[in-house]
Image (cartoon, rainbow, N blue to C red; front, side, top):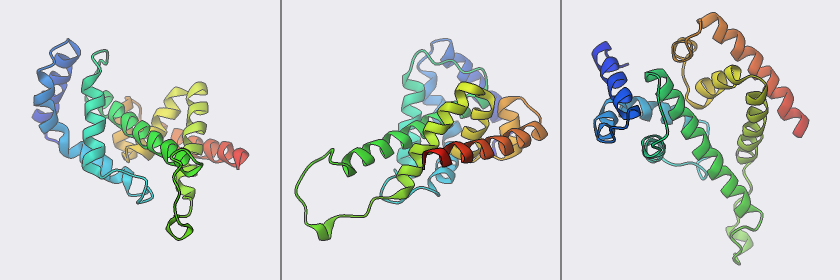
Length: 190
């Protein structure tokens, strides 16, 4: 984990970035890179191998989205990592959609049947989860944020509580509820 002085340095750099100082982006990456990489590795551990990026590529793409958008403002370090988790989730969902489109004729080209790979259920599962998560977010953004941080970012209950400013007990209850709710929603679409 990051030491306290590094945490405050990250918070200050995020404040400067939010205030419109784009030069701070170069200072931010070395301070958060290892944490972002760990977050990406935890997330990618459950993905099908043909669908996902390498952890390094996922971190870089997510980071570019985060610092490349001049309209983003981060309240604190936890808010930044929540945004990073959301960026990684969106990248993976976009890749799954692209994969599904290609699987259903999006990149039409003639190939031998021996060369065709079977469709991955994991791709469809990720898209079903994303759709259900969108419905949960419309009803309860906080519980949706808990899922994003726990499932997509791989944060612990305590880390999620710190990021959202809630107690670990509340996060545990929200996580339990959200998992059951999402299971029920996904089962309706199967």
